[in-house]
Image (cartoon, rainbow, N blue to C red; front, side, top):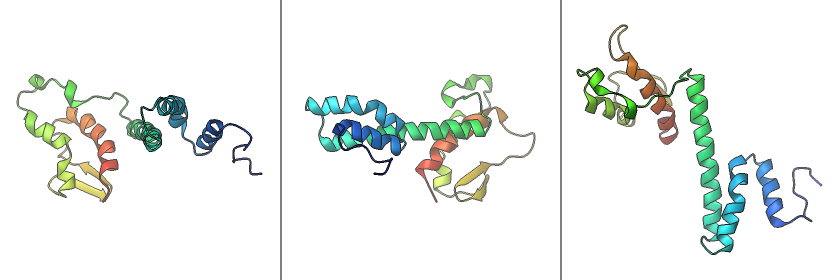
Length: 152
């Protein structure tokens, strides 16, 4: 018998957990008991249980991917535009900065100030010594989220 396959003499739930270990689904393993309890109480259907497990695992992996991207980008201090004090620099156009943070210009394939390194990665270019350098980490923090949503 293959060592990766669960033992058929154990309970169905234990076999599912062993399969999740083999598939490297740590978050799904954590929530499977809760989801099965909800199924037993009739709160969710079997398909909703499968969906919940997959969504939990997907969310866990996406969060881990973003944290890794930020760490590799050496953005140790995570800052967001939500916490930025725009009164600190009144000349900054808040609406324009928030619009840029949505990264819609990438979806529209506007090339103005965009440097396309490859179709999945874009860098914002500006002249050396010019521009709001204090905003760069926030825009970079949004980039990993966007790259998963939109693949070219």
